[in-house]
Image 1 (cartoon, rainbow, N blue to C red):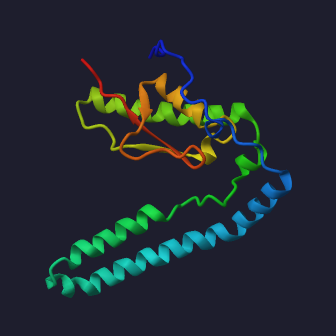
Image 2 (image 1 turned 180 degrees about the vertical axis):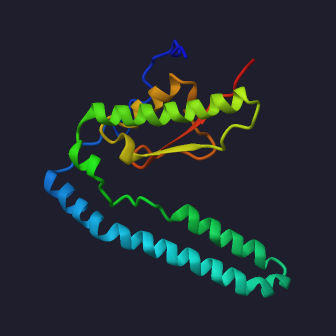
Length: 182
């Protein structure tokens, strides 16, 4: 796929640039806490999810109440949207080893966008609906290159910032695929 002809920088705000590297001591502390607390976090998520299922089975009787089922499903959706599998406080081993390495983060972003593009093109070729979007790239994927690089790399593959759900360059970049014109 040929890159787009307009390599104009997308954003000039400092928040769209690379984030400053974190101190090695801070990263090491976060990594140790991640190793100790992340399994407990995942276990808590599983227990709460199983609690929802158990309550849903018992609450089947309450579905005669108008709106109960819709409210319960809304609660589960809010839980799923607000609880992250990889919380912002955790630091993985690759992040610990490659803090401040722009090439590492550039490769991460490019790999993620390439995978989404391949899925979109495969769906288009098979004449199926594309995967639902917008597609989020969390800050842990691009902190060494900045959100501006994510947008520029995405534009080169016919992606753009999502207009439905806005991006926060210090937390997440949300992308959507440009409509395909035949």
